[in-house]
Image (tube, rainbow over all chains, first blue to last red; front, side, top):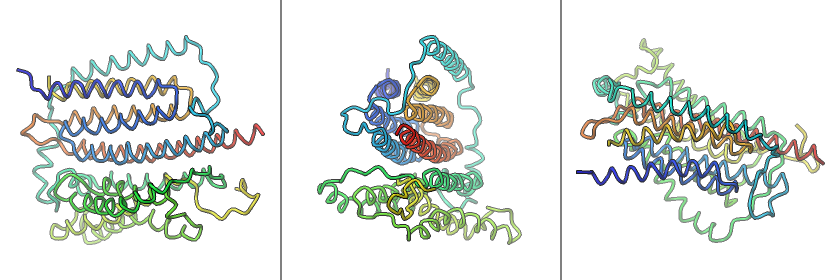
Length: 325
Length: 96
């Protein structure tokens, strides 16, 4: 007796591997990115099958949605800079020297050997080894939330999550520095259909993002998924030019970038000053504190991801002063 | 055949494809994308490691690790893409 879901799993797995190979071998860079986005969404579906809905949400929203938008924006910029924007297909926008066949073969052989080694290691690994699930299940009543993944992210392993927010902050600082003085590739104007779509979609996205944040305490969802969905609001606003970043708004943006890290660190310090270990939230206030941190982190993530998409820091550029750094 | 076996092998295969791409892709954009494929492959293996036979709930710790990994990867991708844009602009001004 075969479970019909096994056939689904097999087909999905085949599609994922085929899409991964296709996205790297297709010549047109635009097709490459589109194939990658489909690949990411199917991977998220596979993770739902592996009963990891939180991870699937994060992969679909951040790993595929935001990453795909970043890639498409960069492709547009590269085609503009190399003057190939008028061509229909986007072949190699960076200068390419032909690689000797021997190098490619050596690469393929070594990567094949490594992959084979990984397969052997994976098949030889003990199945369903002891994990952290008994420990987490035992400690859940002290976490202040009902959803284990949120409990792990915001309570048991808060240091990881704090550092993750710091990484995001560091990324936006780095991008602003790298792109300083860089001129923007003119974005194609969005049609009226888009304007109408944005007006309809924006309120819905705000509600979905906030819901994901709120529901994270007891069901799949949370700050990162909610933040990424809210970042989509920023992306739509930027794309439809409903919001054009102004130099005067940099202060607010900087405040929003730091908000999550600051709130997180502040709560840890306050908890620590009360004679406890940092992040050992008092049980009565654990849920309030976690939701407070999550709310602030969500704002930071949404603004930071939108800023990463926009790229260049909005500085006032005088005419003919564009490469002044 | 259980989902963990199927998707575990999928993860290894995706990682391998990404590795080949990262080493032999010529285009910078494609190389960044190949590294992203590697990270998804690694994520697959962690999620598979957390999987338990259905009535039992999966292990939440690897799930939290993968979510952290996804956010770190998008930060790294954004910085890499900014560097690529900068390089391209510098090359374009050099040629003129």
